[in-house]
Structure formats: C-alpha cells, structure tokens
Length: 224
Length: 218
Image 1 (tube, each protein chain N blue to C red):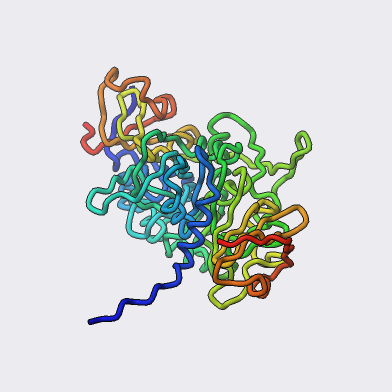
Image 2 (cartoon, rainbow over the protein chains, first blue to last red):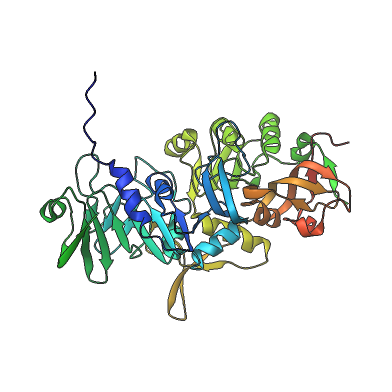
C-alpha cells in the first residue's frame, strides 16, 4: 500500500492568479497578459461576470479551444486558438486600442521583469538578450484604469524584482497600481509602496528581506 | 468592378525594394496565399509593416526566414527566432512600435491625417527621436503616418466591387492597412457576385481595394 502524498504547498503561480482574480469586480472589462496573467481567468469567482478583452480584436475571450476542433479565426494574443463566450464582439486593431488607450478597460494584468517604488514597470526587453518587442503592453499599461502586476516576488536567482528604481528599459512610467506576488500584495501609493497583505506561509520580515524597495508597513497587514 | 486575379498574378506587380503592409496577427487573418506567392516569386529587399514576425514555418514568417525582408516595422517579433537573429546580425533592420501606435500610424496615413498624438511610450525608449506636444496639460508623443506601396489583406468573402467581410478575430490590422497603401490586394477565401454580400456585413469598404485575389480567378 502506498502512503498518501503529503499535502503540497499551493503552486506559487496558482496562488498569485487566485489572489489577482479576487481583485476583479463584477461586470468589469479586463485584459490578461500572456503567461501567468492568463491563469487568472481560471479563478474568477463564479458569482462575478468578468469580460476579457483580447487586444488582437475581441471582447469575450473564453477558454482555449479543444485541441481537436481549433478555430484559427479566433486566437488569443499569443496566437493560440481560443473560444468566445456569449455576449462578446469582434473589432479591428484600431478599435481594440481605442478601447485600451481610451480608458475603457478597467483592469490590465501583466507580468513584470522589474517594478519600482514609483510604479514604473519594465517587462518587455533585456538589452542584448531578449528583445521580442512590446506588442500591446505599452498601450495597455498607459490606458487601463488599473494596472495589476502578477509575478513571482523574486527572480530565478532569488533576487528581488521589486526595486527602488528599475534598471531595465521601461514599458511605462508611474502606471502600476498593485503588485501581487506569491509572497505579498503591495499597493503603489503616491509616496511609495505599501504592504497590504502577506501570504499565509511567510512573514513581514521575509517579505521585506526579499524586496529591493522600501515598504511602508501599516498596523494591519492582511493575509492571503 | 475590381480586378480579379490569382495570388501569383496579384503579387507580380510587387517589385524588389517595395514597402508592403501585411495584415494578420500571429497568422490569424493573414493573407497566406499572397505571402506564399511572394515567396515563390523571389521578391527581395522588402520593407514590411506588419503586427508581428509570425511563426518561422508559416506565412509572412517564411519571408523573414528566407532573408527577403530588409526592414521590418512591427510590434512583436518574439515567436520567430529568425527575426531576432537577423536583427542582431544586422541583416534585417527592425523598428519596434507599440501595437496601438502601429494601428494608428497606419490608420492616419489612410485617413489623410498628418499624424497622431498618443501618451503611449512616454518616458520609455519608444519616445526616442519623437516630438513631444502638450495639449490641455497632457503630454503626448507625435507619431507620424505609415504608408505603403502595397497592402496585402485577408478577406473571408469579397464581392466583385471589392467589399470585404473579414470573419471574427481575423480583422485586426486588415481594415487600416487596406486604407494606407497605393495598391491594396485582398486575398479572398470566397468571391461572390455584386449584390451577394450584405452591405451590413462589410468590414472593409471596396473603395480601398484594388485587386481581389482568389485561387480560381479567371
């Protein structure tokens, strides 16, 4: 008889996605970036209707298409065949970015390489190493009413990604509103970063140690 | 009534060194029969304005891999490794443009405007070399029109007047590109007679389209 497996620590990415999903209001229009932010769609509370905007040209983004029946006329921003939910609509790129830049998207959720105290974001290139282009990210960060960064708290070398000043080329200046990581929820205020919540398996000290910027810590720090 | 040609006939006017726009987003809504015909024709030194460098084994991405593109103006090249390699080796010049800015630069060329003011890219490397203007206390970058000799666009259905219906998410850059070129070729999956395409279903007005390309053109 095999022993039952010990309960595993919740997957970091899933934890981040679940916490971001809790931020999304009923009837809001949301754009999710490629990668980790895409997972957020799996955790939207069932009592809320959230419409997803896909910058290549539609509102009403649904789950990925079944492998055996892809519709190549409906792809997500990563080029993968997806489905549409009821109540969606299609439009061209100029309209899509009018929706984005014009302030009609409530929330955009994006990954990041670096974020800093001023709410500056670097997420589109590493000079000499990775220069894929910004795609729609610069427009999304400037145009969306709220910018949420969903990322792991430290990079693969264990170094902080939340810094006093970004060193990499910026995607946008002073546009980030909230940072959700596997360790903490941090709000970008006009005078710096405020630690709002910490993950249940960490401590305030540990979060401070893994953060490269000053965190304002008020009396009540929540837990998630 | 528009000229009806095969993809090979339609691209035969495209010369070496031409500036072309190619519709599509990661091959969705891309006129792949036209890019294939261009590849077969051997046209080179192209300047290509398009959203992305696509995939290495499909559509426009194959022109990049084959070294036919001298200059690429796009928002994203990350899913075609050949694009990054050719950019780094200096074989292909790449201008990266934020996606919404790309759409508006193309649209304003087709709409007779002298440029567009956008907040996108302020305070980033995307503002390098651009004029900054302030309107009602808000700062903007002045982005200039992007025109082309030829636009290659995709339609699900075209009528003989050139009116085009583009299905679903295939629309993307096709309508704005159709407006912004000297000569626009629409690759149609299906050609119908005048009167057979419901005017309510027209994505791209026929006025912007010069040639309709279909496989079985007579």
